[in-house]
Image (cartoon, rainbow, N blue to C red; front, side, top):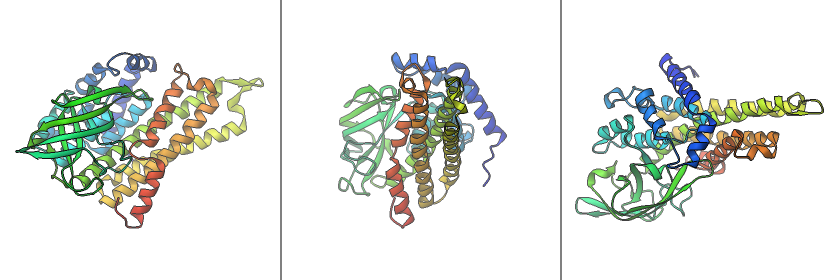
Length: 381
């Protein structure tokens, strides 16, 4: 299997890495997280205007650079290395995914605004009772003339505090957990009836509990087919998982590199602890986990264009590896640093927190093991 990148893709990686190295230091990130609004709009503007990476995964006809999932993977891996909190995943990967695959009215216009950095999207899909069952929905969208009226509650909507739009899953028919009857809408974040309770997450992002109370949306807000959007939701979430795996590869790389550097500096019994054979073995094990994660992530991206079952199996296999690696590499990094590794002043603790959150994002390791098993036995995803 050829994992080689084109010259354009290599240039994209170098461009993103260079910008983040110059403008996204750990101290600057810490300062931004402690202030309002909890992210840096000027960085987002640079992503759009200076780097053009917000259009990397969109076609040239849509104002992009003609790329796709591989470009998202490259950007997300570099974002993981710098612990970027700006909403690339929610806006470009998830929002762009729904607009590209669902083709709602005005999709090209919205994509153009994403590329220009003018639209920021939060994905409102999770509900308190649902866990990882995407069709378990209490949020409803009922017909009202030509449009719909939304009511419900969405939990932990990453990026919602500063989003301009929300992509919302809601039930237009069927029972609470039925596969049929799931629909997707794009809703103005400031629409009448939308209220939020905003808070920071443990890894530095900002999220909201979002409440919809008789929120009216036009018919054009519907993405995909009414009541038959679950396959679209699963496809976009699989793309989001692949991108999150790429981010994890960047996080894991920094956890491993930071641990190597620290063990060369810390001394016991008159020598660096990196000279102790048992710790060398452990750091080799960490390196193996990182390399396996990178390979599985690349394979998952290659499989995104295959059948629904093959795509889902590859995504779940990659997420299982990523989950195990985040736990193993993260815990060993903290153990080798000692208690100081979890202090706010040390970067390693921030990488560990992000790795811990990634392990549970879009489904835990146990969930994806069960999903892979079910798919392999011919059961529905």
